Image (cartoon, rainbow, N blue to C red; front, side):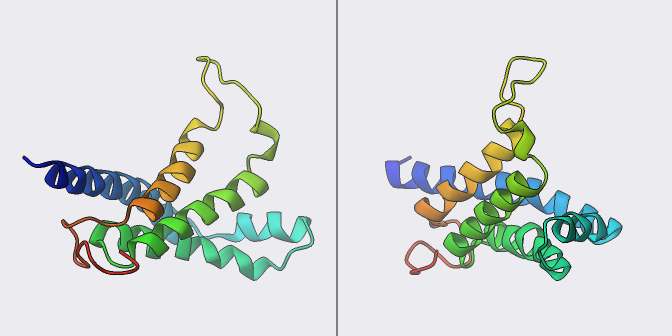
Length: 136
């Protein structure tokens, strides 16, 4: 396998892992709603309708990653979604260490930095958009 092939395979694995894992969170929110997020926004003086943006960050963007279409944009949306999660839900855990010795927010951190990595790397050849598209 050439280095280009292995790079493209690595990009596919990263896209699929990040996309599928975030999508599962989005599907749970489609089922359970985003009222609790709206409540947190209201408590901070922000409009509650912003809560519906979680569907973009946890359903639309992951589907883009999985398919390999507008992949860089999808990665940025996932990263932005995670920044909102850090600010709204996890701000008090930013510098906390978990019971097993790792960062308390290591999962959320992996999602954030995975989204940034996908945005920087692009989709690769194993995608619907292909290697050459500007936003792939």
